[in-house]
Image: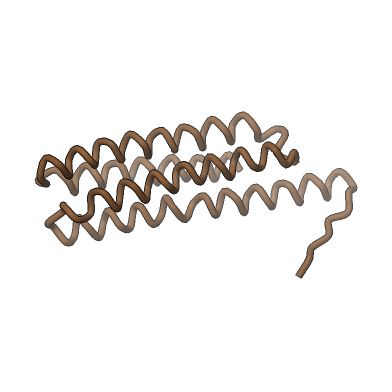
Length: 136
């Protein structure tokens, strides 16, 4: 799970770099929205990082799992805000595509974080001798 959180952080840095580069020649309104969106994305990234670090030792607890999912949603919502508020003001199609690609990656990583969460929970239950029941 902590490795997934590191991947989220790396992808977030790429998104922030792409958003800054793609709006370098944009109008002042777009630059302002980029700055606001970047702040939200960075805050969401810190929330994912601190939450996963704090709850990793006790991730089998349902409340702790919810904290991780909630943190991932904050980051995903921030990415959506950044993308929707800046993409219209970006003139360079390549820069627009780079920004879309970076945002898509960041938004997909909370899913991998959730999968990691499920795997670590299943593994901890299996190692503890508990029965793991999978429903189809």
